[in-house]
Length: 191
Image (cartoon, rainbow, N blue to C red; front, side, top):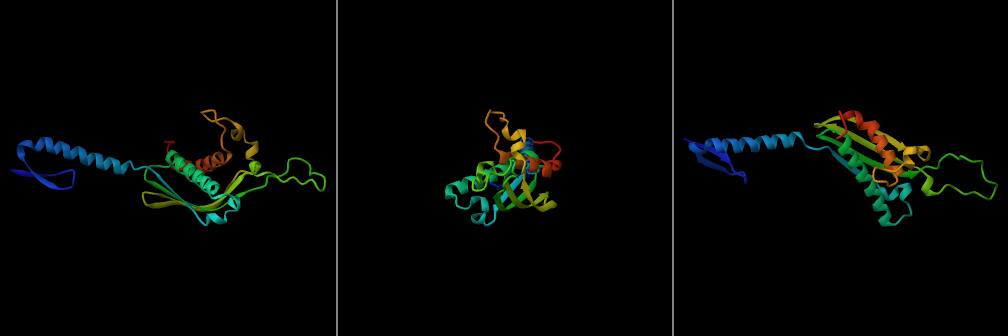
């Protein structure tokens, strides 16, 4: 009696019954591995920057600085997706605008003629985003909102050192807080 087996290249080969146990075990392991890899597919985060050349925060910056900022935002969101989203979840984020928000003054106004506006270093970043979260192909959450933390300078985490003694980037901390609040409930535990 002859049976069939699927070779690595997807071809069907014929083998004799005497070797069927060994080949059946090989095929079973291959199929089980394929099924598990499909079921354990990682979460995916897709970030799209809509008309980034018009972003208020990036106006007047060099092309290199613009690309570095966009890459940092994209990488942060992808890292957070890997940490907080369930396997097979797909989060599509459209960044509609990036802007610096002037914090409320914490000191009395300066005398007339001595207007020293806040520098970009102390102005919190504000992102306008639109997102859709899908799990197994089904939309489970979608919204459009503004992400901002006007009080980020008062946040102790903004000044604390990270695990490797590097200062925490306030924008990353803001995105981390937002991501955990918005999508943290979509996973049983951070991965």
